Amino acid sequence: MAASHNDTGVVGVFGSCEVVPIKIFDDSGRGTAHTQPIVDAIYYAHSRGARVVSNSWGYRREEPITDIQAAIREIVNGAGGSSRSPQATYGMVFVFAAGNWSPIYNVLFPANMPEVIAVGATDKNDQRWYYSCTGSALDIMAPSGNAGLQGDQWTVDQLGFDGWNPQVTGSNPAETDDVDYTAMMGGTSGACPQVAGIVGLLMARGHDSINPYNPTPNILDILAGSAEDLGTTGWDTQFGHGRANAFRAMLSIIRGDLNNDGFLDAVDYNLMIQVLFYNAPTLFPGLADVNCDGTYDATDLNLLIVHLWHNYPPPDICYEHYDY
Image 1 (cartoon, rainbow, N blue to C red):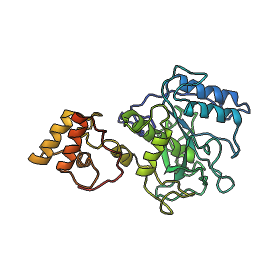
Image 2 (image 1 turned 30 degrees about the vertical axis):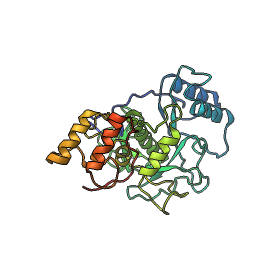
Image 3 (image 1 turned 180 degrees about the vertical axis):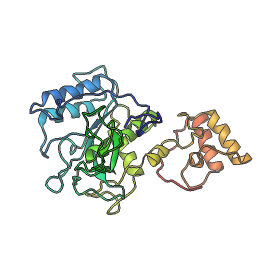
Image 4 (image 1 turned 60 degrees about the vertical axis):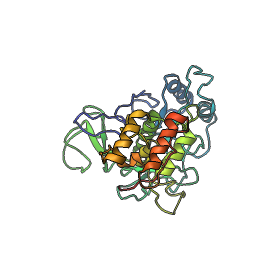
């Protein structure tokens, strides 16, 4: 999710984000029978100012575990603060892997909580992986590999010979020429951090419609509206709202920002004048389509004017994408 552009290996969805690594498993990668360490980890992330939590873990059950459920709900619904971290002034978005136990289980706990975003897995052809849990709690999909560590998704590995790719023999197509990387990543655990990265991009860029104290409903609306619909038209139990699309999600909240600097200001107004009347190139033509009607003209310029100088709201979130 957070690997940066360094000309080496793979690049994450949000390469410039800060990461708060929190360990809830033992050195062998196994969980604990006790829930308190997980509850503590949730509150710790909140106290450290984390805004998005990527959770590629879950329980092989659909029934809730009370203390974990309560901790997540307190932070999501607590207007930013919580009993354990009252100094945290912003809400967090929890993104969870839906689980790899279809058709035995539907979306697992905690991914099936309505307060979180549940992510299923598709293959590179936008087909649902056979293992990806389905059901009424499924929100969104993202690409991943086979859950059996048989390759398909590249990621960084543990350094040296302690990771999933401990040797280079060429006998397994998932092995690479560098033990610090692996092509064995898969499952909804591989899909989840991609959506968490998109959520991070949306939170970092911001929009007036995103409530900083309880952003999850607004973020989910953006993910749903910008997703590539798969399966039955609209939301369905197999694909949720469809496959997440980072480009469409970001484009939806930055209309009018012609120089893509994160601000709607007089610079954008001047650029719009140049685009409309002097045929000047723009960073991306879609940004000039402020009212999302498929073209850019004087109406879009007027919307910028009334926002900048007459205190009108910023452009609405828009999910259309046109080839200009």
